[in-house]
Length: 153
Ligand code: TYD
Image (tube, rainbow, N blue to C red; front, side):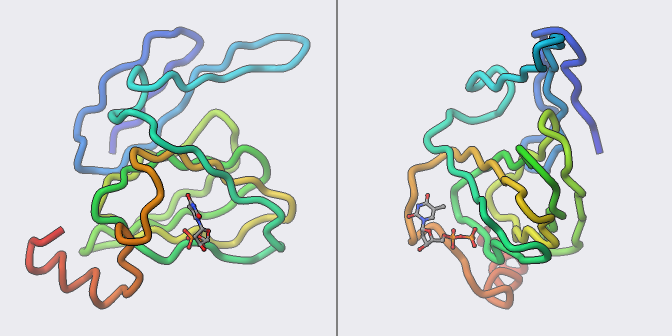
């Protein structure tokens, strides 16, 4: 898996394999007054940003997600606290422990997404390539696996 790092420059590198998830480290503009990171549309992510949402007030140990999307691509990070991002590509599951506000994961469409084990007071930030549509959701894991096996996803 490739890890992309801005380090302290504004010179992000292009994503290598769009079909795969990628851990992305954002640049950090260091300042004694507090650090700053930025995501500027397609300069970092391989999609145009259509929607941003965040999940908060999650009770400690709780889980969110448990679905895949037909079309939506996402970038997911912990703006505060931590959680485990479980991603299944139809063949295997990979787990990312997200606990920094300058590191997240690009998640392509057709990936089973589960956010588990939230620490109390965590905030999950999600940037999406599409407007919200309930029709874009696959909510059954068995159906997801079936679509993957049929190459329909
Ligand atoms: P859902 O995506 O199921 O949450 P999670 O997968 O994180 O557990 O969304 C929960 C509710 O919020 C559901 O009723 C749909 C609504 N919702 C919107 O209205 N707009 C959005 O952009 C999102 C992500 C959810």
